[in-house]
Image (cartoon, rainbow over all chains, first blue to last red; front, side, top):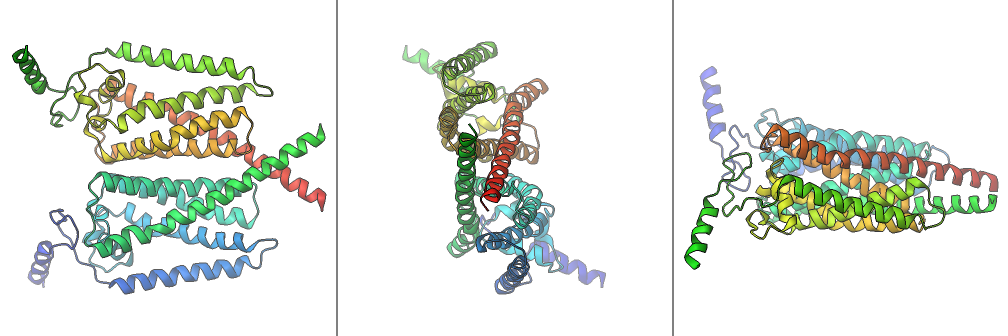
Length: 231
Length: 231
């Protein structure tokens, strides 16, 4: 048995990885066990579950607009993504050696085809993911609570998190460009993983910042009018 | 004459640089011409001039608190620092070859003693400095105008810029830590340039975010009360 395991391990060590650049040294790399469709189906169904649950429960809360309920869905979805998926990446530098078909390791093995800096543990990527997982993740859950209970800090909190997401995505893309923009296994993975999969974290935070910015300005205009009336 | 120039150039090429790690390849490095005290004196006097000018001019504007006037000083100072000093760095990848004793090149030759990633053009540093110089710099000038004219977006704009500064500083320190935290020529330069010179961009943005956060919450509380009264 032991001899067999050794042979298997040495085969694993020789296993070339599917990432670009090809000369990236990933000693001990173990190929993914789950297919792309399995990974995406699990992610899609989990996300759908989170969205449905929040949509249903938020409908029982008083005085919430549909936009607020949708935002609660987004914040729980993005918060859990930050804490679970990205949190796993931040604290698992050797995910590419995983032999247990652990779903979270499989996600990053697959995503690294679009950006091998994840497997290579690029410091810019780890810094951004660290801030996202540790600070922004819990803040997203706070945003769900703040919207549900109509806190006065609800809009500024959403601006703060959304800006963090936008800044992180900017650093993510700019560092890739500066380092030669050659980390995707193919054009397919470049567009589907590197560009499209990240697009939500550009478009949605931008829309949220614009909406909250307007709400905050409106609140100050009301305050100024109230002060003028008092005078 | 030409022969003399060639000899001088080849001497320059052989000139070792004062940065750590020692094996950092900086072909064509030209040592700084200005002393640390000259560089700091010019920076100190320029900053003092900016502060005095804004303080004096803002005193002639109606209804501005002292805190607002101080903030206007800060925003012009930090905006000009972002646009001029950091802007020069972003668009001058070969500053360490400068032979003209240009002040801006001298600043970065000197600062690189505290963090050689500037001379080495680390992608994380360039990404953060790029966002800071190109987006945050002009936004700081807008903040000066917004405070002076009491715009309703004044507080949210200040939060947005301050958070950008805090996020940038976080990426700056975390990437350094992840890359081994060994980029300073000595402990003196580590503490004086890498830690102390950057400390203002941690402390002041944090204070501004706290202040603006409170002001924004207060505005929403006034708005909510006004709505309740109308009902």
